[in-house]
Image (cartoon, rainbow, N blue to C red; front, side):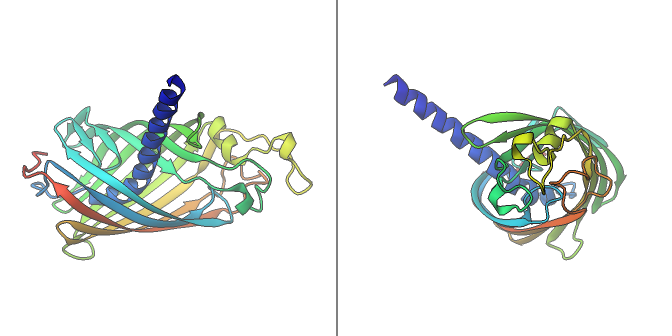
Length: 293
């Protein structure tokens, strides 16, 4: 009986981790573009529904090979005074929010990949799901009725998981310039455009680019990865409101890895790669009360 209880608890924890990672990945695309510039947004206190998205992107940064993923996940949005769930990521604890300054929670996630699908990594351990969490400090640079430009500083602790164990993978530092615009392409659309260099500690870099002696071959010599510059990203996320309860989003992201700290690794294959995503958000339930924020 005790063993069954332990198995049940572990299964619940795994399910929570799965939902956390999946929702973070989809919400990071859908909700980022949903950040409204309207000073009096017509939003309810909470809403719930379903997100479905398909993504195509590299197996890992600077990989020459790509994969496609399909994700259907539930979502929940709550818009409280000090805690917001589901907008601009999964959870936002609004520690400080003033018109031109915010202290916030930053989240990130990445898909797993099978090393047998990679020519460079064949025979090496698979790359697990990655999730990231840490603080974010933001300063508004420019502001108008329909546009905002922010300077964000994000530091996140990185973890990987195969849903049986969780491993710490170091830290990522990501300064970011983010432009938010409403009605850019049409009256019912919004846009987010970002540019961000990424810097990672040695443990994070080693997860992607290190080759231990046991996995070395004639074409893949041993390599010890070091911390430093990981690369830079430009991302664009477009959201289109079809109706009040239905939204479609399209995202693109380009990665630039010229000058990266580990560009001499045998697992570093390309100085440029890209990712695209398309998804639908459907609100099924919502509060009768409007959000105050």
